[in-house]
Image 1: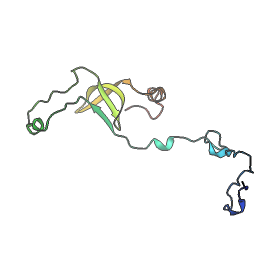
Image 2: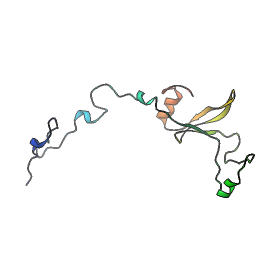
Image 3: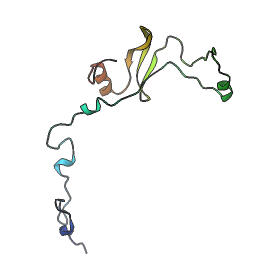
Image 4: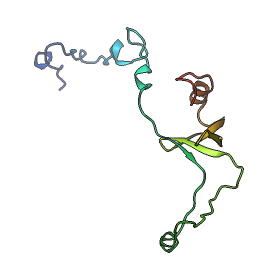
Length: 132
């Protein structure tokens, strides 16, 4: 035999259970897209530090090859000369570019944005904070 829930045991302010036989309805504020109030902004994320890495190439080697490395050793990488470099943010490929020299430092010129359309569009239009 089904008994209706006892709403007397609920804490103050808790929503009461629906009457027997009626489905529960979600409250208006349970869905952030339909909740009243100002829209949420992602501006608080703009100061989160991220690690940008430019990858020239890779090479797998055995432990004995690694032990044999010494100053002056040249290690051939898997990427052909002149091919675009991978640009990663926190390990995720986001762009490709080419190496440039800026004074006494290396830099990278972005040539291609990789990723989903929303992310690519935000970067290409300078949506989240401009250039590198």
